[in-house]
Image (cartoon, rainbow, N blue to C red; front, side, top):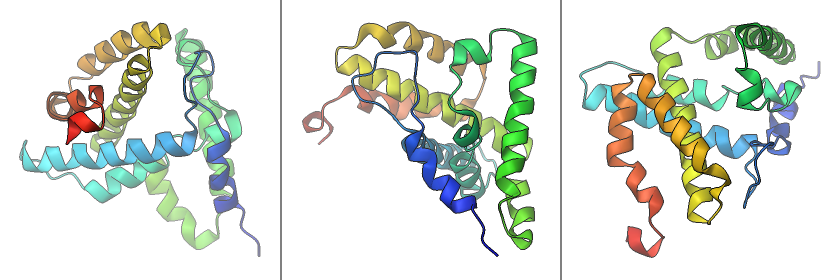
Amino acid sequence: MQNHFYAMMSRMKNIYRWGLMRNTRRENLSEHSLETAMIAHALAVINNKRLGGDADPSKTATAAMFHDTAEIITGDMPTPVKYYNSEIKSAYRQIEAAAEKRLTDMLPEDFKDEFTRVYEPDERTKRLVKAADKLSALIKCIEELNMGNREFAVAEKTIRETIEKLECPEADIFIREFIPSFYLSLDEQN
């Protein structure tokens, strides 16, 4: 029997983010998902090493890697639209759930329980993935601003405020220790 799940996953590179914004460099969903997974892994490590927690870095990174795969079917809904009001937000969550089900239905039966756990992680994992997702967006804004694209100035400010409201100490540590390097050139990082 043919299973189309991984062929669909490979289409992530065809989904571009930040559709309403003028970009100096387009970012696709594959790039974003990898970056988010790496950041989520770091947040789980911070949780364990700095905050005495017991997060699972691998599980957190995997959840982050797949966190936006519904967008293969739905496309990237711009944040101002997705969160315009509670009705749209709720409807979009239902659409995302249906898209995730469509994707998991493409898996062999013996894989489905694994992906149920990926798409429905525990609350701590969800919190770290959400923070990682916002940190990835912040990094995109910094990169665009570094290229002189003022289009991302308000987005950067808004995303920073959103991260602060998450009250996620792991994200606060990541911002303090790792984000400043994103403002530097390659030569300045050596």
